[in-house]
Amino acid sequence: MNTRPADSGRVHDAPSNNWVYRVLPRPLWPYAQLARWDRPIGWQLLMWPCFWSAALAANAAAALGTFSPGRFALHLLLFFIGAVAMRGAGCTYNDIVDHDIDMEVARTRSRPLPSGRVTRLQAKIFMVLQALAGLIVLLQFNSVSIFLGVFSLIFVAVYPFAKRFTDWPQFFLGLAFSWGAIVGWSAEFGTITWASVMLYAAAIAWTVGYDTIYAYQDKEDDELIGVRSTARRFGERPRPWLFGLYGLTIVLLLFSFALAGAGLLAYAGLLIAAVLLFYQILVLDIHDAAQCLALFKFNNVVGLILFAGLCAALLVRLA
Image (cartoon, rainbow, N blue to C red; front, side, top):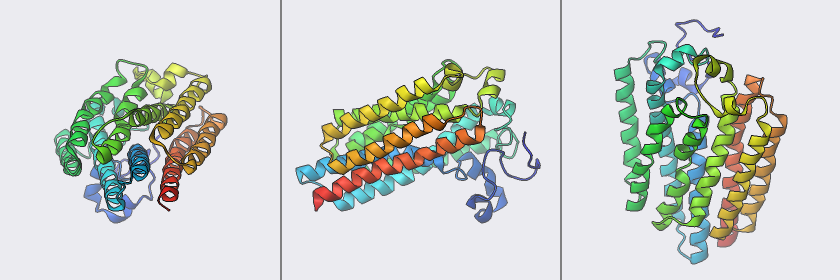
């Protein structure tokens, strides 16, 4: 149950001491909440496949003698900005589509649209502004990457509706959220290879896994209003599914690293990430919403470790 006052300006499922509430003037709070600036985990998880791909491509470029530190740093900066902008636009779009559903779910009822703190028109204008920021970032890349970025909007558009027609909306989230795994590679080489495709597939499996854990927070509400999810599909026995999803993630990352010729330290990072992924499954209590949220957020550490391993391998190759 939401224990915050209706006029507090906060949302029930966001930390109340976030920088948004300390720095931004109160009239901007609803927009920050629409973009989820008060919950950075979303753009972090969107960003990591981009960073993995850029670092994997950098390893391959270094082996070819074409690596440019300046270009690599620029790509990382652009992917960071793009992740924040497009995650915000995507969440705003998702809230517009899910306006009625969010009014029926206790955890989401206090969000800006269902609480009436912004209108649908205001939300749509804000979404367009964020999308334009993402477009400006995308236009800094080569033509192949621009095409891929625009093509990904198909998955972004479909995802909010997926929970209405399939038990696997997390798969559609993975299609959209993992797209950077392809774009990071194409930004370096102007093409798609099996290494990037394998990385993309790995990121999809990872996304389905961690978002399933997240979805267990809403399982009871979802059942009441008829919203579908992998949490409802897996029921009381999610571990076999999660072992399969996270196991597939590791295997596909292994193939991707091998195809790209990644160095030994990349595999060390992969090993550590594998331990952390399976740790999540072993300790998971699907009836503890707070723990589900914490384990979901823990995947930011997994993403960081994989990226750090690829960067370490790159440094060794350049030494």
